[in-house]
Every structure is written in structure tokens, then in C-alpha cells.
Length: 386
Image (cartoon, rainbow, N blue to C red; front, side, top):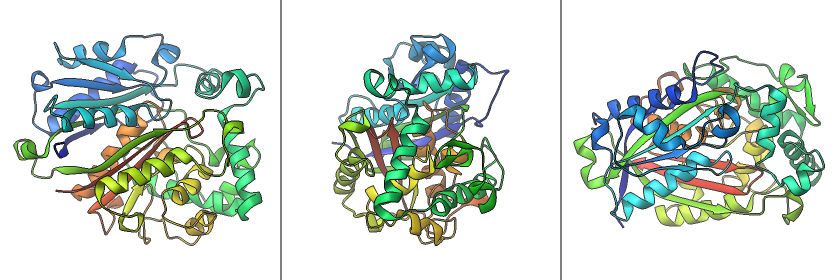
């Protein structure tokens, strides 16, 4: 297996863009990525696209060649990956595997979603399709309701508090306010977070990620060729994708995501590190409780200690282990098909030392954790300086 490096990154701003369509967003991110690596579209050997629900959100199928052609990427394999909110994380995983195996040298990986074409109730309905529609769906459960159950159970088992959930939102909004591409560049107070509009008890509007439009892209190649494209290559040290049951009632313990734990252990083993070695991370905070659970499942803290960990300031921008310096899904935005690759872009930006106001002090080894549904898919990626 060959070592693989990220040599180009590109993102659009995330937000609500009434004047933009899905393809224009994906093309903008893809061309920015290629420009970052000084590569022409004609040099790309394969294009992997993460997209959850383009057919439902905008009515367009056959998205990979539809987008690739508009970028000038032609006559190569173009494939769309769907794994709920982990769609582009999964696309990245399979792209890395193809380069590591020697099938291709230059692979472009994109992620895109255009969600604001639909009303909020319709978006909620579409997203619910990533759950168990025969069980949870028939009962009327949406993802806010499912993660509210996870939060309530975590509170019951470990004493997690509303203040600890709110601390995730306050921190991530503070980071997102420094991110020029974030959807919501708005600082919030603990009082605001605690007293936000109720969505699904105990979650308020400040505990829930945004309905966003946006796209992201990365270019990967064998490490041995990375110097052809960049002076700051970032190495894929470890990566794993795993899965679990879709429905909550089929899980042994809804306060943990087994797929995340398993993916993390495989990625750590591949990288030859432990959780303690990870200096910073981009975690999948679709809801505030998801970030708290992830810190535990990734082994950053003992089970049940994720809430105090964030409330104590350990995960803030200048804390012991910064988490979601980008603002996370909570502030940066969550165009679901783009999120996994966007996390990779944010980790690469930190490792390069190019994160500006959001730059963390220790940035040689970072982790991205992308979650699909209520834990049915997980992709964990460990990236490091070359």
C-alpha cells in the first residue's frame, strides 16, 4: 500500500444561497482545490463525489459526471457516494484506498449539498430518510428527536447537564465567528444557548446544526509525488470507515456510537498512535450531544466525562485539545454531503499553519470524525504533517 497525501483543498462559503445551484457550488470548490495544487482538470484520473440527497433536494440524479463535466474533468470514472451525513467522508475513504492500492495517482474528492431549495419541514423529512423509516420514521421520529433521546439518556447515565451541552454551542460559535466561510458567524452566550427556542427537549435551537448550502473538495495523490503539487503536503496517517445498526432501538447503548469507536481504533492502529497523540480535531457536532459523545468514543476522555471536558474549556481554541476550530457543523454549517470533505479541508488548513485567527498552537497531527445518521456510518481520518 502506498502512502497518500492531500495536496489541494477548496471550499465554498457555507450558507443559504438562493442564487446558487448545486452544480455551481461543487464546481467552485473543485476548481479552487485544483488551483490550490496547480493541477489542470485534464490531469484528474478519477472523481469521487459525496452527496446525500441531491435528487430529493434539487431533483438532479447522476450527479458525479454532471458536476465533473462542468469542471472539465472528462473521460474518467465519476462516482457518487451516499452515506447520509458521512457521504463525502466515505467518498474520501474510498478515494484514499484507490490511490493507496495504485489504481490512480490523482483523485479529486468532492462533497456538496444544496439544502435550502426546500422548506424546513421538507428538509427535516428528507434527512429523516437516513434513519429507520420502517420503525422510527413511522413513529414520527426525526433526527432532533433521536439525538434528544441520546442526550436525555446520557444525562441519566452520566449526569451530563444542559450547561455542558450549551458549552459546546458557545465554543463552536466563538470559533465560527472567526471563520470567514462559516454560515453563522455569531457569538452566543451561555444564557442564550440555555434559553434558545425548544426544538426537542432537552435540545434547543442552539443545540442543532444548520440547514446549509455548500461544497468542499480535496485532491489526493501518492506521497512520493506530493512535492510536484505543493510545498505543504499533508499525509493520511490513518483512516477507517465502519458501520452499525441504523435504528436506535437496535443498539446496545445509545450513549455511544460503536461505529465511531471501531473506526477510531482501526485508524489509530494504521497511524501507529493512540488517542492521546491527537493534538486537535474536527468532530461531527450535528447536535451538541454528538460532540460530547464523540470525545468519549474517540478515547479523548473517559466515558461520561465529555460534558465536563468541554465545560472546563479543554476543547476551546487555546485549550489542551482544540475541537472544531472551524466552528463545527453548529456554526460553520452542515450541508450534509459536503461535511466530511470540509472537515478534511479544515484539518489540512491547520496542519499547513494557514488557519489565521483560528490557528491552534499544536497542529502536526489532527483528526476528522464524520458521522452518518444516528451512528450507522462513521469515518475517522488521521492527518499529519509530511
